[in-house]
Amino acid sequence: MTMERRHIQVFFIHFSIWALFYGFFLFPFFFQLRQIPPDLPVRLVLTIILFYTNYFLLVPKFLLKKNTWTYVVICLATIIALGVIISLNFHPEPKLPPIFQRDNEFREGDWARQFFTMLNLSTPFFISALLRVYVEWRKNEDLRKKVENEKVSSELQFLKTQLNPHFLFNSLNAIYSLSVKGSSSTSEAIISLSELMRYMLYEADKDKVKLGKELEYIKNYVQLQRLRLSDSANVKLKISGEERGKEVPPLLFISFIENAFKYGTDYKGKTYVNIGLQITDTNIHLRVDNKIGAHRKQTKNSGVGLENIKNRLRLLYPDSHKLQITDNGETYVVDLNLNL
Image (cartoon, rainbow, N blue to C red; front, side):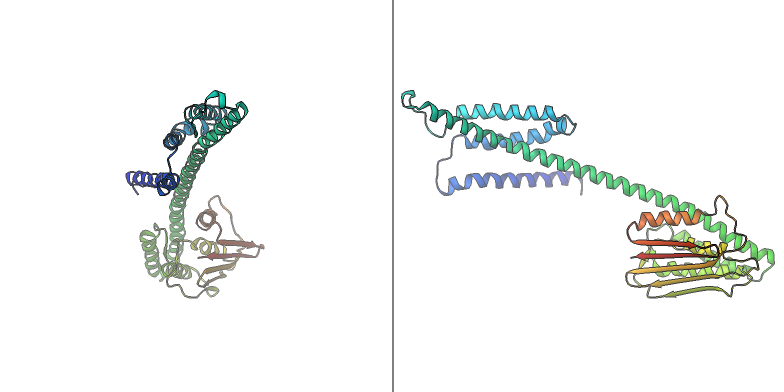
């Protein structure tokens, strides 16, 4: 909605409310053919003036800037001054000659009339102050959410730019290992890598991708690793459930799988990696088990992928995921439950 249309909408809302307000007070007089009190039109016009003076001037200039006492004094002084002026100039009944007036009755009635006049005058101040404070609160709340969303979006983009080179580095290492061995699978591995890179180039920058494409990406990656390994008999990938109609953020699971292959080879050259993905209508359960190699070496950048995916899960699924990582020195287990 454009700013101009929003202003027009607000104008018609205010106009409708004031029309109902005036109609509520004037309807009995027109319907019952009663005489309108001489001070009623003045009160109604004064109500609008006080309402918008307080809304656009007093509240922003004093109340919202924490000058509460100044605001209260100005409002009270205005209410008392106007109340006295209205009471002195408008009377519900014609004045009697002084000889027929009873001083006590007149004074009591006069004070009561002034009290109710001031009470009525305070109503537009009270309502307009509440409304303006609420409007400012909503504006600040919307701004806060917008800033938070922009922050989350920029953080996610930063994490993606880190993750893609990290993955490419690991994949090139795998192909390099094949080429050093003179493996006949090198060309097949390059084709697998090209499929992975195509996915990263055309899909990884999207907010969400079809779950089927993400699963195909995982299968290609596991196949690339199998080609690299000298013994891949204990590399297992099992996917169960229906993926159609479901979407996930791209590259959401790959870091856990990368980590398993990176550290899942023992000193005999055997790799033990077990990957299971269970898909239901409302949940995705990923479990990755790997044996911990005897010569696992932690480097400065060895945990980049895992830290990135933890941060992405925190940002994308703050209250709808459960990640549990277990490391007993022999086996490393990642257990992720993701609510769709």
